[in-house]
Length: 204
Image 1 (tube, helix red, strand yellow):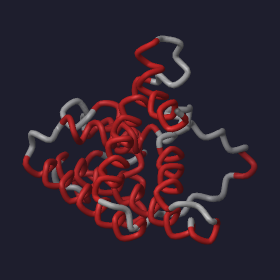
Image 2: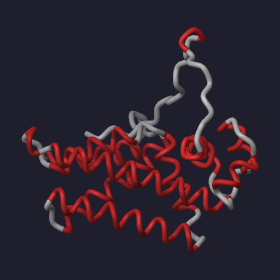
Image 3: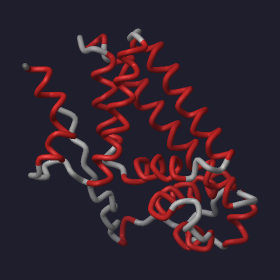
């Protein structure tokens, strides 16, 4: 059973004596810092509800520097969406390619990898926020590219039929919604049906 839950991903504080001396970051390192901060902030508040100043504060840099690397808020949001898809793609492909050596079906291994990804609220919420902002043509195109790349990889690595691949993606979308609502383990009929009815059918 795939467990769709969100966990607290806040890292534990680093003891002061273990902190290394501050080193000036390169533009690429700064870009990574901005993307990490934006994934958290934009995942929570979306494209329209996130001031770039909040992202700058979360990244610990100036708003002007954010605009130096990402000229518009939309360009930053698109970079965050693409990063989210890339991490999903890489983790699922790695799991699928390793599955044969473990005697495990590739799709099952990919499902387990996706379940692990759902524990990162940033990745999950960015996907939902991108879908909510799909009225923007650039965001819609980014979603199409992301899903096209994922589907191509899943078909290629798993060798599964189009129907099985469709079922895999459908289950993933349901998992996204279930995880966002945090309904796994909720003792209500509607929640139990959404998270476990397919497992009951498979054992019938």
